[in-house]
Length: 284
Image (cartoon, rainbow, N blue to C red):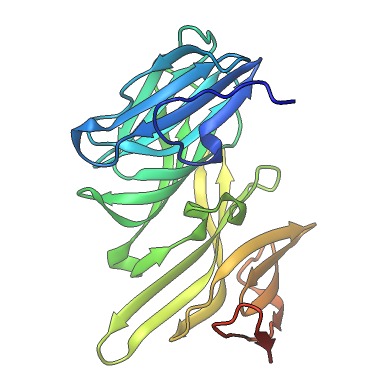
């Protein structure tokens, strides 16, 4: 049944920018695109979508929201232009929300996922004077809301790995997290270029172990293609019992969770040939 429509200033980043708790809608928005007129806000609306409260000007001048996550009475917001302010917003009193904690570190997270009451996972990029310098995996310790800290971090610097990317930075469904098995896994691709050899692609799945005391440790890299001139898009990892199943547009591979780099079996998928007519798709 239709009830009402209301408008708030700005635009949302994604589905995680909105959340409902106890009849209140919390929503984080950004107004403006460039320059000093940018304003990041957090609104609290009641069941009639009337504004109950708001926080203005989250982040430093020129910064925009890059990730948001609401968990219970708290909201977590990352803004970015040159550093990564990670804000902890106390929403326990909907009429009086306030910024309870703040952390500034290089780079930024484009996706936040709570691991438990103590840790928040961030997937994003390292910083290079306002640009990016590689995929970054962060573990934030949020047990003390007044003083969040970066518990552990792994950055894949472009200088060491070549240009790198992961679909988990923009599609949370490509990320695998299992606290019961202590694993965090995500697609990871790199490529280099030389005038003699042209482009060289490497793609697969990064698998890390996570321990609440020791932090992140690399478990392995499930390779789908190595040193090839063809980019293979790896987009999913799942597990059943003690096995990993990883999927790209070229293979489905199976490996043990305890030894992810040891491929037990690999199935090659049919090659798709696309025409300009979307109704005309053939396979070999």
